[in-house]
Length: 159
Image (tube, rainbow, N blue to C red; front, side, top):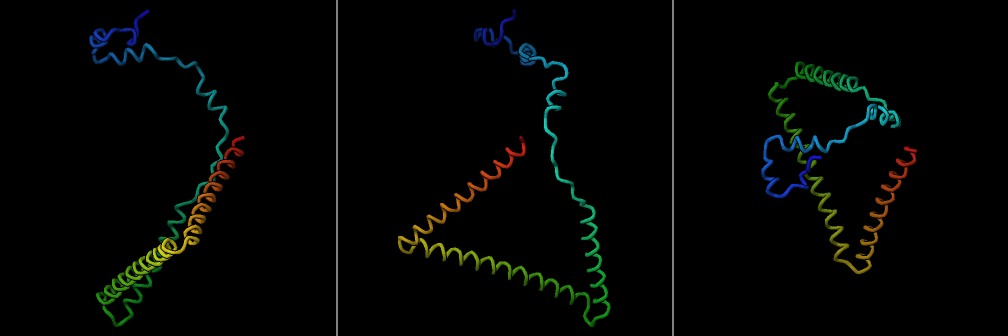
């Protein structure tokens, strides 16, 4: 019987620093797998219940069709109007800039309002602070129940 790496003294371990020392050690401790083991394990697994795949190409075809209709309408409007292409492009850029500014303003106002509401609750009376604490506990409890329900559904599906 050959000595393993654990049986060797520190001096003997250092002497075996050849590049294939690890390969030889792994070959010594390798556990052979019996024939047909993989097939046996895979045959015992339950069938997967995957939902049917979506047809993505159809969705992209609809999007491409709508884009083509919008391009055609834009071409008709450009050809029939008094404005030049540069004026129309400037109008579209102005529209996008106004949309972004409105969205940023709405977001800032929402966060400001949320911050003021929470600040008023924290700076208020003891009952307001207790109500905020109870609301946080209730939200955590709801999250726990929802996560637990999903885990229970998974175990029922497996059996």
